[in-house]
Image 1 (spheres, rainbow, N blue to C red):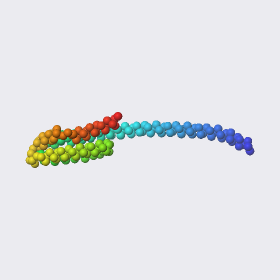
Image 2: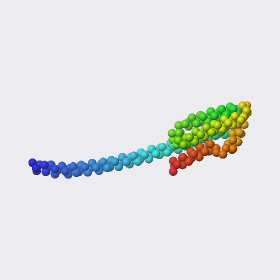
Image 3: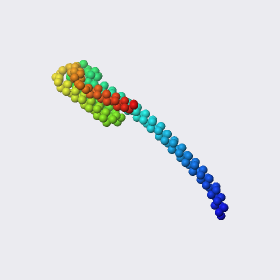
Image 4: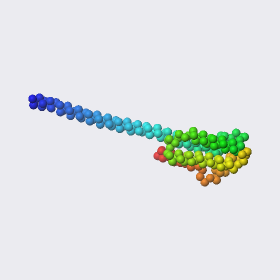
Length: 175
C-alpha cells in the first residue's frame, strides 16, 4: 500500500510542479499583454481627445471672430439698414453664433467657458449701449463708426481676452 502511495506521489508531484509553473508563467504573460493593450488604448484615446479639444479651441476662436462687431457689420449690412435694424441683426447673429457653438463647452475647461460667455455678453452689451446713443433712423454705418470708437477706447477687448484664454488653454494641452 505504501509503495502505491509513493508511486502516485512520485508521478503526481512533478506533474503538479510543471502545471503550476506553466500556470504562473502564462498568467504573468497574460497580465503583461493586458497592461500593454491598456497603455495602447489609453494613448489612442488621449490622441482622439486632444484632437477633439483642439477642434473645440479652433471653433471658439472662430466664434470670437464671427461675433466681432466689425465682422458682423460686414456680413449683415444690406446698405439700407438703420442703426436699430443693424443692432437687432447683430444681437441675433451673436446669439445664433453662440448657440451654434454651445456644445464646445464639453471640451474646454469651465473657466474658459465662463470667459467665452462673459465675452459674448460684453459684446452684446457694447452693441446695445452704443446703439442706444443713436437715433432710431440713423444709418447702420453710423453704428459701425461708433462701435469702432468704443472698441479703441476699451482698455481690454473682451474678444481679445477670450482669444488669449483659448490660446493659453490650447498651449497647455499641447505641452
